[in-house]
Length: 445
Image 1 (cartoon, rainbow, N blue to C red):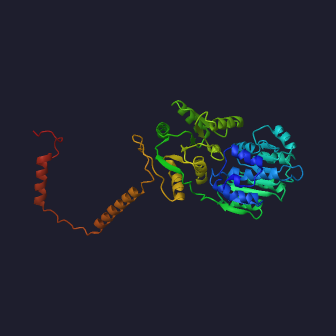
Image 2 (tube, helix red, strand yellow; image 1 turned 30 degrees about the horizontal axis):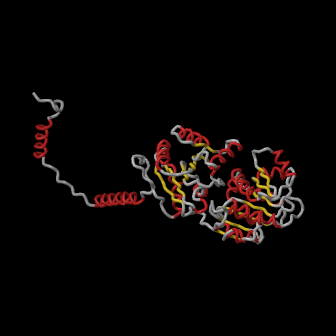
């Protein structure tokens, strides 16, 4: 499917062409016809599959080709994180360029009074995080009485961050005759499905992925490590020896993100840390510079795993293993976007073996090991060495069996020696070792 094949508003089509959007991705091919038909949609798709365009193109087209009913906001997009909201805003602004549509961004951590002033103008499209939108809704600043489209993006992440109740309250206060588009990386969670059932009306369900699998175009590898210092040496080697134009390194704490960035800077790498405790303006600026190639090595906590939609990331490195399978899939999904090739390398120590095993079991196979000459782990017993472990267990079992067999054989009692034989043996020993009257090794006088 090409976008030129669709009956789109001429200005919207022109903006798509200017941005280089020509051929629709699979998620767009499956989702666009449902959205254009005005039906509710429940979709599970891989990260990087083009979901944002799949819901913003029909939304913008609908607002440009139909007349508004009343004066309320016509389209509301809810995202779990500020970073994702900014990315949706960036794409939306490019799609509505040259049109009469007004777009507002409502996020926590930014000027509340300014946002209230924006909402008084009833923008056509609002892109918001649920918590801050709920604050304005309680104060009566929002108007969704005639809302035409509600879009919920990354619903599984909404659940993790505790936004489900807010999303449900926002939807309950909006026009019940609206169209709702609901997207989630996984539909395995009962609470996500419960939220979908509450928001959607006879939806078309589309599942494009196996929620436990990484896309085939992403090559996954494991480097077995001993400790954090060993991981640092491995990371420096990877940066020096593996070609990549843009890298994203994941860690599990703010402190480590900053420490690792400073460590890499001391090794002449332009590395920047991104974590949730940075002011929102600084986070936005770091993301902007990273997107525009001002630097190409980002050390990020989980805050960047969800919704960081940046083209050209060809290598993801998990310095710390993700804490669960869903986080792993979202991290790895930052590379290999839109079908391009990508690499994901996991640095795994003994304490993270269980996390790696969960990933491997979900994918049905061991991930390939990357062995670096001179930097092999010395302490860590690799979980991949299953055959070796089985061989050792078998050998141990056989040895135990032999011991059991030996123990089961009747013992043959030796006949007691005669007194003459015992005395002869004693004299022989004394002639060699001494009779004990002098220290061993000294000549007897």
